[in-house]
Image (cartoon, rainbow, N blue to C red; front, side, top):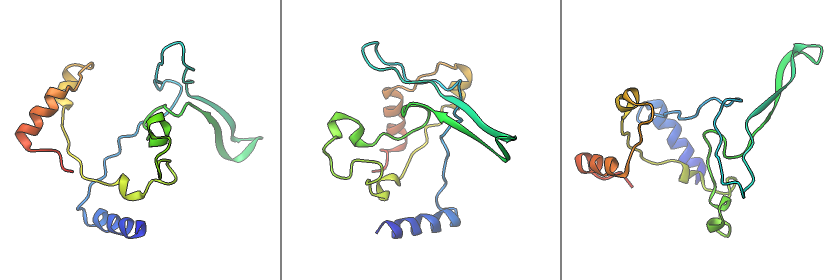
Length: 139
């Protein structure tokens, strides 16, 4: 069944019926990481150590060792990551059906507000107002 979903996705991407928006960002030593209360283990910053860069360690390639906490940057938390989902069937990233990663979306364009204020915060009230104006978010 997952291959049928992927085939449909490929067809709709090719036809232009679906648009993919990449929300990821680059990772590096300046990437912010989650800050937890002191009693919990801290999330490490991103570190990058060069193994070779077209030099004597690897004359034809450039590669690195990258180290980071799993909450760094754009990421997905599987249900089993949290205690509330630890016993769920198909709750790990390798067992979640691919269909669960594909679905309708709505765009609330707040780029003007962010341009006017870099600390802009989208509130629940703003989302509810958007829903009143445009209808409910699709299921």
